[in-house]
Image 1: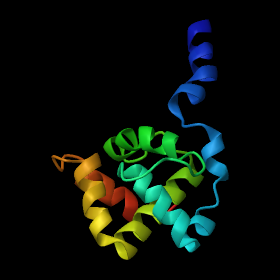
Image 2 (image 1 turned 60 degrees about the vertical axis):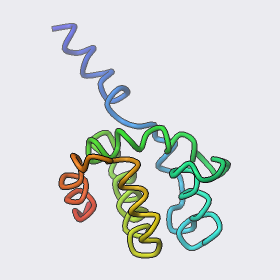
Image 3 (image 1 turned 135 degrees about the vertical axis):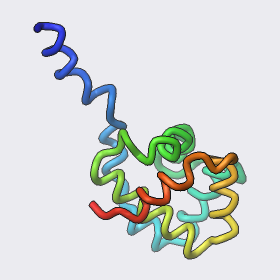
Image 4 (image 1 turned 120 degrees about the vertical axis):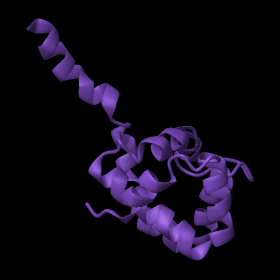
Length: 120
């Protein structure tokens, strides 16, 4: 019984991404073309990861794509959806590169696309 209590207490710490990622103002990033491009360049290994948390995001993205943001908080899910939709609509060439980099075999495409279309 004690083991179950310990698992229940610590599982949110293990099963969720850091709450610091909740604080990014995605609308502000998407409105600032230079900042948006900086994030994209980091994610695609085309430039340095100098904008807020961008190096972390690049490390987490393979898992986020593979699991359709399974460990994301609600705000993180919302932010990922906004960001990916903006990438797809505003920078289609980079979106193709994003898909090739983070899902080269297309094995997560259907699940991740369904996740992007969901609403919180």
